Amino acid sequence: MENQTVAKLILKRIEELKLTRREVAERMGYRRIDHGMNKLNNILNGSILTGDQSKRLSFSLGVDVNVLLQIMNDEKKQQELKNDKIGRNNFIPCLYAICENRRPSSIVIGNIVDYKRYIYLEKAFLQSSLKGQIIRSKRKIIKHFKKNNGIIPTFGNIMHYVLHLYYDDNKEDVLILDTSGNRISKEFGDIEVFQGKPNGLYLG
Image 1 (cartoon, rainbow, N blue to C red):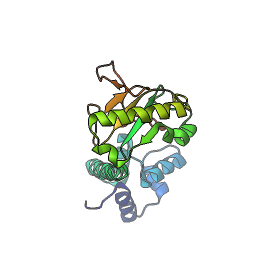
Image 2 (cartoon, helix red, strand yellow; image 1 turned 90 degrees about the horizontal axis):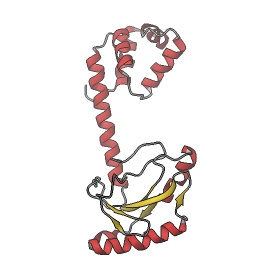
Image 3 (spheres, rainbow, N blue to C red; image 1 turned 120 degrees about the vertical axis):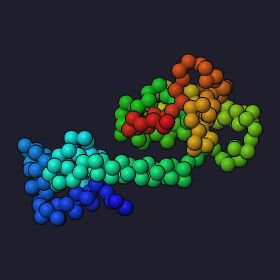
Image 4 (cartoon, one colour; image 1 turned 90 degrees about the vertical axis):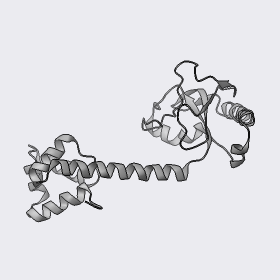
């Protein structure tokens, strides 16, 4: 199954069985054929198979459902590795603002203003001692908070900031600072440290 994908397997079986996509949709049992063809096209374009779709395809194309699921899981792992590599290559140490809204009230505007929550840090920052990093962070936070009047459009009021220095940092590794740049203890309630994304996802 090297370099195999769900889409490649489906297209191969369609060719072997000499079927049209419409006929595959019919075999999958959809009452509305146009709806079934849309589902099939979405799968061929990379949409993740649901359990129901896996069973339907398995039956209509004569493919072991476990083979479909294995290929799908392999694709998912490959995509995760690809995303991880991209994330590592693009990661820049930063301070980011945690706002009252995890998800922006407007997704469109949230995508546009998302950058406003970040304070990207120079390489020299990493060479400072912990005390030095906190002092530098304090200056940057005060400046950022004042510049944005303590609010990020659609994300709401800035509640606190998180210092994220390394790609692999998790909840236990990051430093949390208030809007005046003072360090907040992690024991201070169930404080949020993951920046919400405009599409509703959060870094874990």
